[in-house]
Image 1 (tube, rainbow, N blue to C red):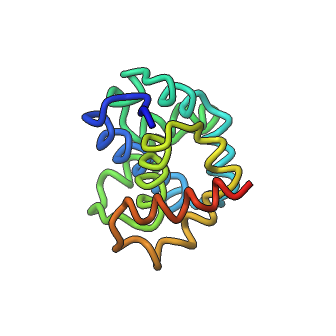
Image 2: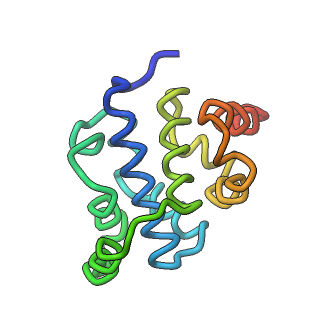
Image 3: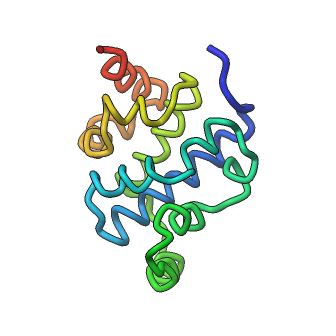
Length: 147
């Protein structure tokens, strides 16, 4: 399958979506459902899917959070997140793997999340986070493709 954007941008997208979901879920305490809705209702998924370079590598995960939640002042939570030592949690892994699944399969984020929610990504963390990312992608995409 042809990927929407070159592999050289993949690590940036993975890192940025990792920070995005870790900020929303871990630092802000949003529910998985609300974080998923904020992501899907923003321009972020579509801009990544059309390979807009500004969204592939021109914005940080924190800037993406400000785009997804424009009604909220995130400056304090971002400042706190930046000051604490970074440790990737299940929430980071969720964004990281979601980005890989979308890139590898060239399907909309909405399609993936319709069949495999952010909640399911988080529940899969303990079982899959030490596996090769291609194994995690394979398991997730089997569920997505089970129509």
